[in-house]
Length: 640
Image 1: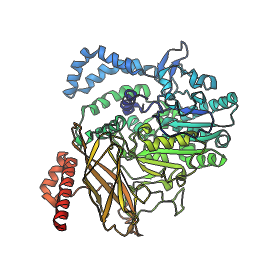
Image 2: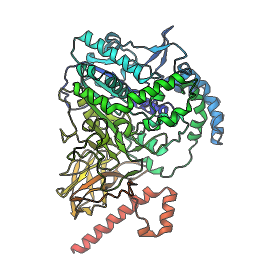
Image 3: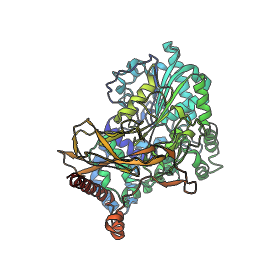
Image 4: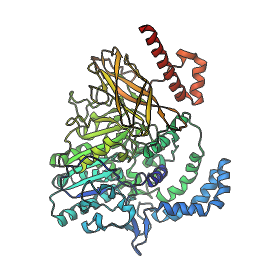
């Protein structure tokens, strides 16, 4: 998928969950041990084309060029409205945008029962001939498939056409029909399934409805950032709670475009942006069109469903309520049972999720920006900005094996409660649908989707640990200790390995660890792009286990012009170096990140002013650099 389309998809996701319209892959240097099975691809929400049955007019996929052309043609008329918006009257521009909403989305209205007002169907029938990759000519559909060229034979790929508005069960039955057609046409004994976002929900629904059949017909089923347990974005939209988190949105865009400048540092406060007013102003118009889309109600997370469903009229919306209630109770609430049954029947199922971001719509839920990690995986998750206290042990509701450590290094997630604890990977800092920008998650997804040797569990290959810190040029540096699994720190470690993931030379200014008792030697070094350096540990690691710490790498990119000349990468680790600390059940949740102690340097007044000014991250960087200078000077003088 092009970055232009991805950027548009992010913006659409804020109001209609139109995120990530396609599965996309960058070129990978690794050779894939392809298993030779046909590949059925189920894309993200909005990824399939729709048409009017009466005249075959394509009414979806939205053409971004047409939207931009429309807006530019009417720019002169829109400018006064933009001025009024600046004057805090967003209802005027909402009124101006109404014709555009009607033009591009008006035909997608559903009635009180969730049935389409217009006779709209997918452009692709659920047959092998219709869905064959070589038969798909439109660029919107081909976005899902062209990135597979050079990795697997394109003639082995099939694309599910679906109606994004329908219940997941309806689209799962279309998937069933397509699988049967592909098997019959090709003569293959099994197919591979790969799905992203909404595609993951559709596949999980199919596996839940037909677990025994799935075991007989499915080789690999790889679900990337699946919306299995819903999307809090749908809840925020349908209950009118959207409050855009600008920092998360900016970090999302930084990751997708690989920007090396940390522009999000400039957004440490939470000012009231006019776009929030605009979203609130146009929301009633959007809900007129999409407020009874069955898929949106299927997206409501299980723990929020009972409250959200009260927004519907029990008489007028009786069928919609009954259908989505059935889905939540028989599918969403029983994923562990359903998917385990499909596994035992013979299907290899893998779930790969992103975590560590606030929901773009503003809810304080640990997510990939769109999908709550609890919904994608079934994991118990602390609210965004919080973690489980030191000493926390896994709940063990679906995996009670004491040898399996399913608690994340950040102590924010407990995958012992997951749908499939042994077959779920979580990438911290990975944003929704951006697997092509993180080498680890892309390679894992490809392997699990159509390799002859997919991993059968998270314990099988140390190169693919259950918890991984996502990285690309926007995150700058990547760190791990030399002798422990990624995300963990033990007494066996002798050095911190730091890799420069940016495209520029990197000057390391400081490396620090909170609450671990260790420091790092010979910090000032220049790393070439892609270079990894070892920084020897000094000090004495605390002799404790199940204690959360972090490592912050402060650096500057050389030879670049940047609005933020310095940057930081902070990664979470769990200390495993002795007896576990005693868990304080009276305080089960604590702040996820220790704040810098400005008070120790400047007093309470300055500390208060820094936090309120929004300059805390900048001052944090400054103090860390000054601390490192102080340590270096002291070391030099002491050695003399």
